[in-house]
Image (cartoon, rainbow, N blue to C red):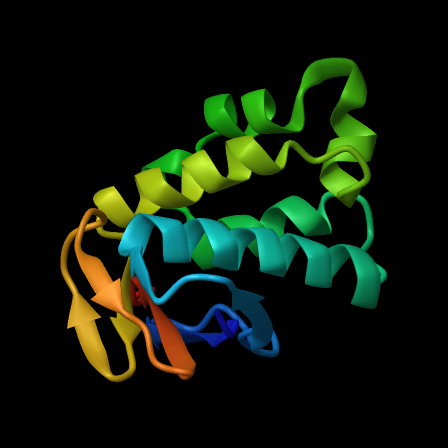
Length: 151
């Protein structure tokens, strides 16, 4: 079976929170996948991209992932401290020992909480367990819903 190509891009809707990262492209060996699987593969690809192509200051790695996938309440001090992790705080914040499984789980919680929507080939997918038939080349668009400041 030929691999399927996925290009995942991020767009911000609403308030201003800086520029979206460059799209990530990866391949998967399946023709059908749930949205949850697509989110997982995208988070893994994003982490690889951040680790290999960007020199980030301590703490910036976590902020990038939070900005992309986390619900507003998920980035509170308690969960941020839990995600950064006591004695490993510096390494986790810089991406060196980041727990990718935990990041995938946080991204899935963010989707469930409505922090972002996902379009697959221009069509919004509503549920994480929806099965998507993939084409040879696919585009995922993560629409991060941002609150306007001021108001």
